[in-house]
Length: 150
Image (tube, rainbow, N blue to C red):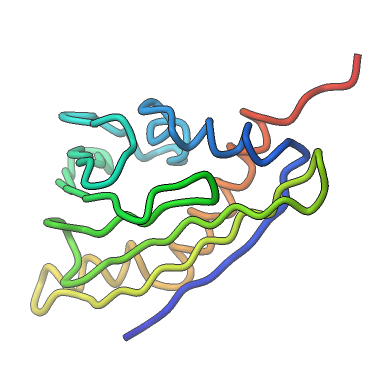
């Protein structure tokens, strides 16, 4: 099974980074244009909570349902219950570097679906696509939670 991992630091306290990810609106902020996120159901983040959404790539809809587990102050895991891949488990981990800096570590274990669906998911969720997506997510997270000095 392929594994994708990346880390970045944010100049913000761990609690602020965790609170950003707890916000049910975060998913919309974490996906780069031209992806438009349509939320159908987003439970408050908690053990067993569910997020159902569609990622729109122009006219192409990608329907996704994720179930959350291992939810705590230092991160959480979302597991694809249904969606474009055969298997997707994404773990978000937050570690305090110091009082005002947090390291975010993302780890995804995944498998492509067979057939045409798998070909499509290989294009979108291959190494290049995930690298771009998570570079954008690092930027978006910093933009959302880093404090500008006064």
